[in-house]
Length: 136
Image (cartoon, rainbow, N blue to C red; front, side, top):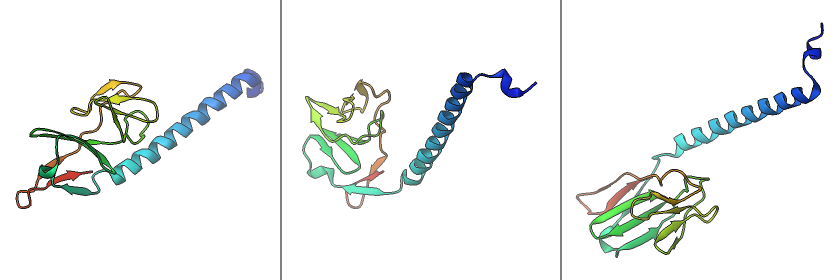
């Protein structure tokens, strides 16, 4: 008996498409995870937040939210598809790609499709200069 007699053309094509899709997903995940690992925490930014007023500030790689003595530093990459968040509308951070909304004070999701809050960035104050150091 020929092994090809056990499977018809339609079933074979479905299996082939499933295998190719799985391979593509695996390779894509490997490449993006490796890129994230290589770029994570690779640089720092120094900011003198003492000179800034309360509000939301958009930088090249992050978002700063100031309210009184509290400062929040968040990645500006949307957790849905990685688009750069660069605007605030009605007190909410809005992703320009798919409309996800985030709370600028906490980074939590207010409206999807994003399912995870914005990544909080590590920061500390340099005691000599008084500047805030943000790790990207």
